[in-house]
Length: 356
Image (cartoon, rainbow, N blue to C red; front, side):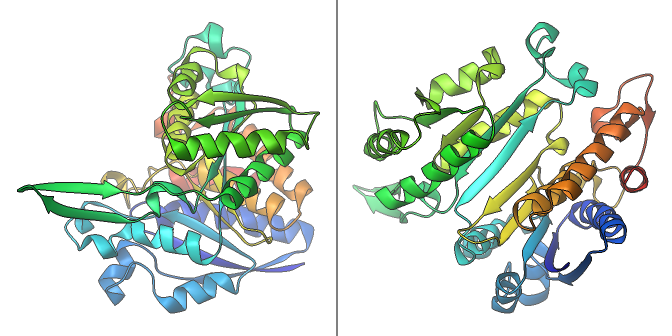
């Protein structure tokens, strides 16, 4: 099978971690007789330096014409002072919007080998953590109207948080379908005691729930969700929420595993085209030092095989290869403990690839 992948390495540690994911993908291609063709496109700060924009229109078109997109990370202090309209992060919003990537899937899985790295007590995490946050990605306050104006002699800033019924139904259906394939349990997160958007969210989700009687459905307020993720994360299976709440909660959930470097994500459209990326940032303080944890990116590549390419067996193989690397005691610096073997970013990539 031949698949064309647009590669957005980005800034900071982006090129290092993406290189390890491609190393593993190439091993999969060799073993299973696939061909993965890679087209590299600049994104973020490196694109600003070259072209004056965080991603070019040509780059967007290359993403659209590919079978899937693999992303590293964007941004860094170097570009903090650029015009807000062309900040590196603007490229991510543009790619999501242009490719119609409305559903962000963020699994939070605590590998048993890393249970000591979790900040939670062992009695809480000893049975493992395995939940999936489904985040709406192209609506809400991040895409609503923004303005800063002078009112009565002082600056007043306003951010509009719009949601339409069809946007909520679209992400809700993804969440219910995902729950059907997992533990048939879904929590829908909102702030319906305060926000009109959340009241519409809850009304729409209730209507959808009637189509999925097998799914155990619950509403939960966002502040309570933040508390319960720390108190008892095992109560959750699939969690669905709007854009900003999902942004915050998924980062909180990622730390339950001990390192944000372990966490993959998938951003999906109505088609098989998706964008896959680790959820951590560009870590400019360690860029170019071969210290980063590439496992989140490697696991993102596994999600690409599973969700965009319908290669479940190959995805399982990558996940098992990562698991074996951890079983064998290999650790990058962010997950290192005494008694294990500390390895570099590139060495971890080699080890996972050798396990294929």
